[in-house]
Length: 137
Image 1 (tube, rainbow, N blue to C red):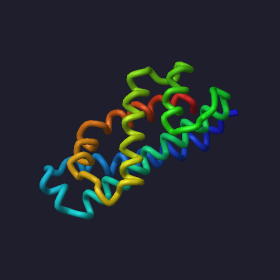
Image 2: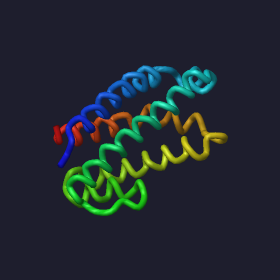
Image 3: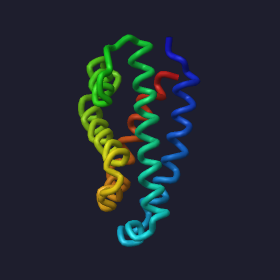
Image 4: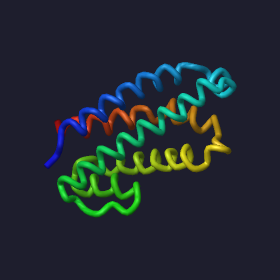
């Protein structure tokens, strides 16, 4: 059975992260890329937002018995297959997971321009996923 408190708490955290990320995307690239507090915050809060989405997705899949998750990319695929998100959003989420993997595993060589681009171009994808999960409340 879906536990609304699990979903609600993570959605609240995503809101917090998005609030910070939206402020950070107001900087010009040069201001962003040369300030460790700015790009470091963006990297961390992007990672946390993606992690929270993965947590919610895993919970929904497990509780609704939608399939087996072997890799993070299985989460959007299974949710799309079950009709909870559309295929296009699933593909954008898979790219976000790729960004999360870079932030976690390739942290020594992160391209700040890539992080900045994610801030500018992909916050709406996080919002769309947040709305998809809010329907379970």
